[in-house]
Length: 455
Image 1 (tube, rainbow, N blue to C red):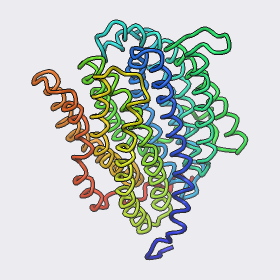
Image 2: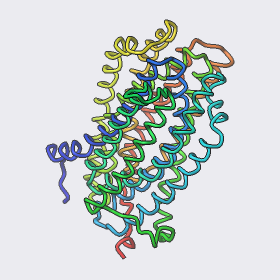
Image 3: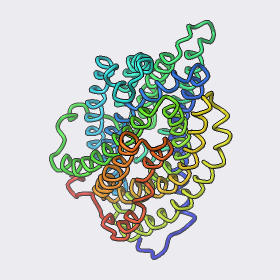
Image 4: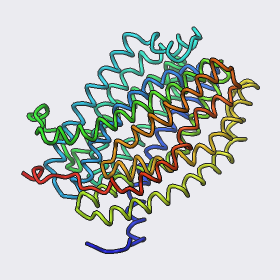
């Protein structure tokens, strides 16, 4: 197992096997947001903008769920490479327990205080009213997501990535179909507009959870160990905490930071908020490839390191980093090519169209940094347990530079909307040199598994 080179055919077969379904899953999830934006954009600009702002609540929730699932995924990938199924089951218990608790809190907040949540993002009374109606219904979907996410994560790292992606994709197809029916009131049903989008999401999440139960049982996947759900070994809790806390810190810095970007632009007027909503949908669609490669990178690197093949894991990491540059440049070109079509597809005011054109051009450059950092940080570095770096880099680049500049530009110096938007894109591009230096230190080349896990 000590080969000195990478078998390119085997490498790309494995990468494709993992990345394609994960990228498809990411694409399908992004298509829900795109479907909401396009369908509600045909109803009214206010409906589209309000829902885009309201879904920032789920975005923040996903930061918590991402940290919890990420920690389980990092350790799970290494223990799967080692062949330790018992520890993987214990990790599944941990992720399910914490994910469910977090999602319950977000559900309660959406049900009891939707208006105050909306006022974090906008002072427009009409947008607050529409968004609050959306959150009261969509809050149920946030609770369901917290239960299904651990199932999808554990299926990915135990080589059942295709069933995991198919479950998510099936739920998304159903979501998009229900969106059309409930938003516009097709087949004799009442026209629900924004509330219809919320109900469609909730029903789709309910179906997704049912599929998680059924498919996982059919493939004899990892199941919850209910008698030991709240009695995980101390050493495993410690290892989980060491991975989860930096991931949570990084996720919150990034998630709240991104939400702050949305709030800053949202307070610059409804036209700026509408343009930013559409640009965010396009960004999420284009990011699907790098998301898939990044998730696959974490699994591949983790499998090699957990199996004790440290040099091979190191070579995989370097190769994946190089690939991320190609994906980033390609993504930039795709964003620029889609700009004219995107501007024509949605119903916006002339001023909002102008904002959207400029945002798309700026976002093209941003995509290079986004792709390189997603694959290198969230894939390679996290796959080896180097989770602290992401938190440090976000604290400096996003909270130390991009957010202060955007706040000053919007509320003190009153810069143009596009100048403020450019400030919100500085963090990903600016930290690329720092990321490359960190990768070359090879602190991420480590086996995180323990012998106790086999006992």
